[in-house]
Image 1 (tube, one colour):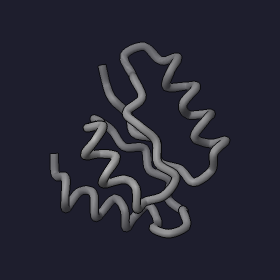
Image 2 (image 1 turned 90 degrees about the horizontal axis):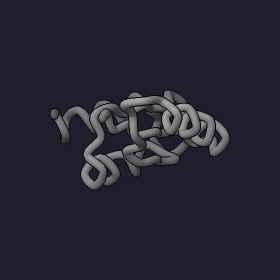
Image 3 (image 1 turned 30 degrees about the horizontal axis):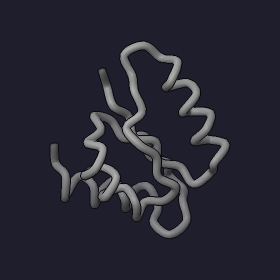
Length: 75
């Protein structure tokens, strides 16, 4: 099973992706975040295999969150 973390500031976008992931064989939800600041803690808790990151979010944009994630959680 592949655990996927869904990061998006739009609730409807998260819900739509959640629905697709929940109906895809071999994939399970690995958590959700609504901004880039929450990503590191959620990765530590849920240990996802894949992070689907929104590019344009308030508080911390996706590129910054991705750089921080790769630096602090290289695996």
